[in-house]
Amino acid sequence: MDGYSGERMEIKRRKHSLQTEILLQTLEKFPDLPLRTLAKYIVYKYGELYNYDFEHIRMRLRSLCGKQGERSRKYQWVTRQVTNPPASWKTVSEPYKVPPGVWLILSDLHIPFHDVKAIEAAVRYAKTKKITGILLNGDIQDHIALSPWQSHILRDFDKEYMLVCDFFDYLRSNFKRQAIIWKPGNHERRLPSFYVKRMPEMIATPLLAMEAILKLPERGIELIDVNQIVYMGELPVFHGHEIRYIQAVNPARMLFMRIKQWGLMAHAHQTSEHTEKNLQGTYLTTWSIGCLCNLNPEWNPYGNNWNHGFAIVEVTDKGFFNVENKRILPGGEIA
Image 1 (spheres, helix red, strand yellow):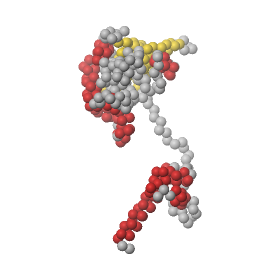
Image 2 (cartoon, rainbow, N blue to C red; image 1 turned 30 degrees about the vertical axis):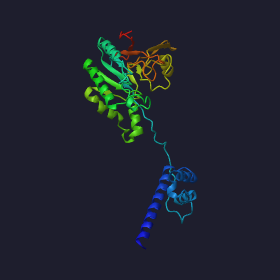
Image 3 (cartoon, rainbow, N blue to C red; image 1 turned 60 degrees about the vertical axis):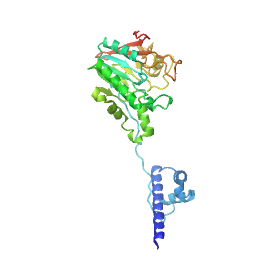
């Protein structure tokens, strides 16, 4: 045999080996599907390797499974015996419980589209209340650089992060010892979504990336999970993206219709309140709080009912709570 013929034989052998490996992997991946279905799948996905010969693929699958008699059987294929339910991908996010005290809740700054006067008004008021800590309740950063929308707006990922760092340092200069907790919202969620689409190998560490880039531990800021419910005593606090279709004329009422108990949320950029009484005579109130961002963005300059606002929540040792849902007027006054 000359060298050329030997090379061709080696190529043919490797091709046959690769074909067999694909057949075995497909049988292992879909052990309960009919062989004709598997043959169609292989033609669709790897057809060129088999010259799109459906019948050839089907017969080789039969051979591998021992369905052409004992003499032609090359592999012993045994159907799996499943005795337990399959492992679930379900994840459970434990509630985050803040300690008793007086808490400032700030939401929906959408940096770099924040409103400086509104932020100053909220901080100024909070300093009169001797707060224990601050809950940054989602959408602190807009992540416009990663947005699939507003393609005409200038995108500068690095500058966005610098502005967020400046905001954190501004908070620390006014509240040096208070706890700061950051619960991401749907806009912060754009970062892991970006990893999924562009850098899937990094999907396991998007929150670690946020902590590292923004130096959150050094700034004394605790970052919690995007879907965690924050409990302030018996009051559950949401950003709002966790509850589908929450936008409404009265967001607080819509929140009540979803959870049927006390609750507070942001996300809707609107101050509202709703109260109902249950059969036991307990008054159940829900609140939505205003935003601290531009009220007239380019993509929705006139068709919204947004307002600036924030909340102060006092939590007792026994879990009782009192909510001050504050609206910020155009001149910076607190209503």
